[in-house]
Length: 278
Image 1 (tube, rainbow, N blue to C red):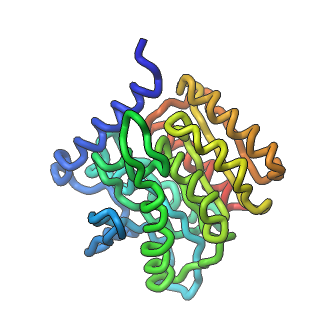
Image 2: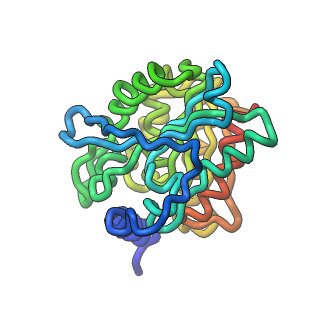
């Protein structure tokens, strides 16, 4: 029997491989306050560059307000059907709606994935079957290249309590790693459908490197994600065992959730409100 893990990995590989083929065939669905930067950023040590897509909150140009920042992976999937193989998350529409109905306003920095390199860039540990890890270099790139650029170019609240990181699947996995590797940089993490199965080392790493008790961790997994539900449950229990306050960790099993953009689009709203809205 083919495992849930393998099926999810194959779908992910096919999805990122097809993005470049469909790009440009349809008009963009991104909102006007999404900016695609006109230059890419080199990833030190990996000899490749990355495109950045930024969501700017409504009213940014009409005020001198500074904003929290959420760093997200798989930038192609966040705002635009044209660049997403299986549908966008609708981050821009969701945040525009939240801005109009609440006081929640933030900047979102979407970092494009490396397509066939994604599986390497989003794991900090080598995998016997899937190859060399580049996750540490990728996270270092966010911390030492992207974040300083964003903080110097845009009006941001740059301290850890106003800085988050979020992703799904391997993006959730590397977000978990990032907040534990750089707790002085990130104070919030959205960890959706995390691929904890990919490297068991994440459990020992979490146990040995507890984050500050004010760190906000939002974990979500879909009820239709097979073995991944138990992996997330085990991680949630482990984090509590390290002494992390229960009121600063949210763990949800989405009854209708699957391993797909439709589920993550729906889960994003509750996650971002829990992380930044309180």
